[in-house]
Image 1 (cartoon, rainbow, N blue to C red):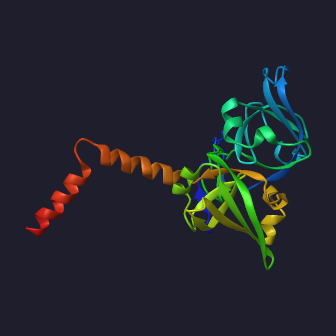
Image 2: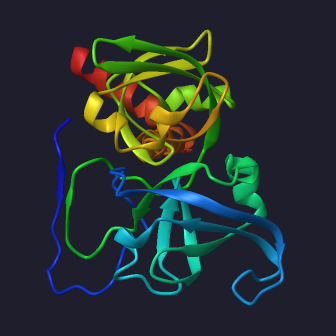
Image 3: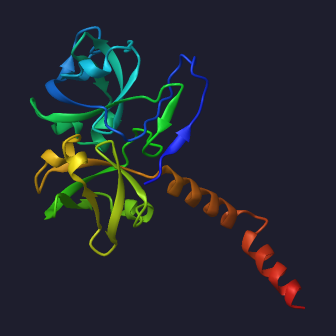
Length: 243
């Protein structure tokens, strides 16, 4: 997989609310509060992650951190831990509502003003969840097969295309539309760096499909539904050439 290169001035102080899918650290769930009445909890659901010191050196309140692929806002932090709020929409779309104390999660800070893009453009906006239905060793690699919760998402999952699983940028190795499944492979190096390698058959993961597929679909649908009739113009063009 060839890296993207995203170039901005090195003195840029701002961050982008997007990610590369390259996991920076594995944190540990310390607490999931269903009703956090503290100021940083905002009377909603909050999640506290520990073991995150390696990514908190430049952290500020309000920064975005992807937790298992979900873009969340930091509401409180110290040298080793941080808290984020979770909205109802996020709970509906992701597996964060079922996350357990002690569970390992993938962490990635939002893209800074300058970065070498090693994965793909990941928004941290989870589309659906998927269940692990098979794990198979292949020499020193692991083949994972997932069944998506929303079969409509298969439209955007293509062999050799990008996908973000728990925030990890991976390459799709196979797709079975009839079974609503797709597969990926984890090399030995990746297995040591991400939370997916710690999962078992039956576990649920967060899925974000490649944004480009959704953009292309919308543009094509808009062109096809346009009153000027894109198809009619295309057909007429070829008819004129044949005459």
